[in-house]
Length: 370
Ligand SMILES: O=C(O)CCC(=O)c1ccccc1C(=O)O
Ligand SMILES: [Mg+2]
Image 1: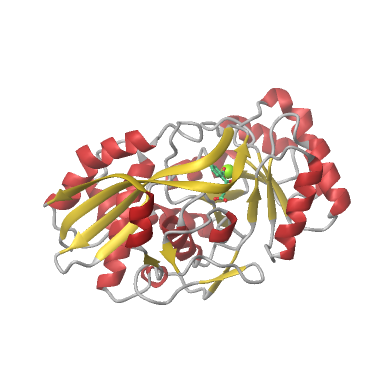
Image 2: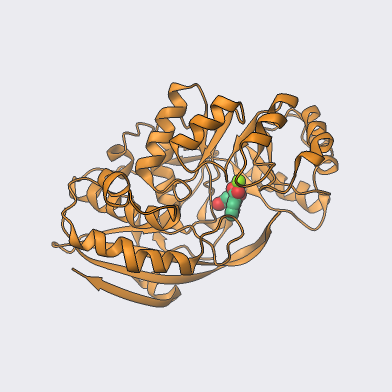
């Protein structure tokens, strides 16, 4: 592959509804959209899932721009890349961390590669599903009534499982109330690292509610305390923040820190490592699902492609575009029917990135040439 041009754009989209987690409230979405072009003018697209502030992990829009501009883009423009797997495994291997920045450009190269091969990205990754099951992530609301109402709407729309964000004080009583209203729905909770082992009793109390799993209750960089907690809880622990690689997953499984893993392409450095992590979990009977980072349609399309792999056996967080944006930047937008998304079969991501819409939401852009 010969990459001739890379364009970075900083986009800003307004969220339709504020999204609150244990680490804060998002009202809008600033992100970097990456476009790579080959010599025939064919484009590959991806987005960085780094947020404006280092609240989910340490990366930000600015640190990603810096790493992309000063390290990753020069590598991609200078070298002849035979296959996108080489980026993470060879060309980026000496650069530590910065997973979301690496994933952003790697994803764009994967899309371009699939288009050059005249293959869907899902197929290029080895995915064989034609439809994927999806759930929905519901943020912390002002009241339990509002939460109950929102859950009802999402169930009406067909979502196959409900994830509720929790934090100390918005947990056991909430789940108890939700279980009174909806005794049998597939339900889980995500704490985004809001608890410590001092909260053991509160967390163990969640065992009474048949939750599918509890996601990342303890520190973002911990796997030791999670093992202690898992030993005390029947409910499976799912790790999100603390898994960046197959190697992290191997250690977590060895310690017994979790029984399920959430795969986010950005968090592990791209599609190549996501697929490896998927394969490793499959070989070890650990189910996986695809997490979300409030992506625009471009990131959503990447999530759909990776979710077509066979061990994504649990519904992910890739909900419809219309739950986030008044207008998405892809055509068609992502739609959900009966809790399923149809995996596109046309080349690459299978959704067109609309330049008109991209331009409308771009606050700053820069072009880099070979
Ligand atoms: O709807 C989505 O994209 C998932 C939303 C979500 O849960 C989330 C959003 C931003 C940061 C972290 C997380 C998370 O899964 O922990
Ligand atoms: Mg999470």
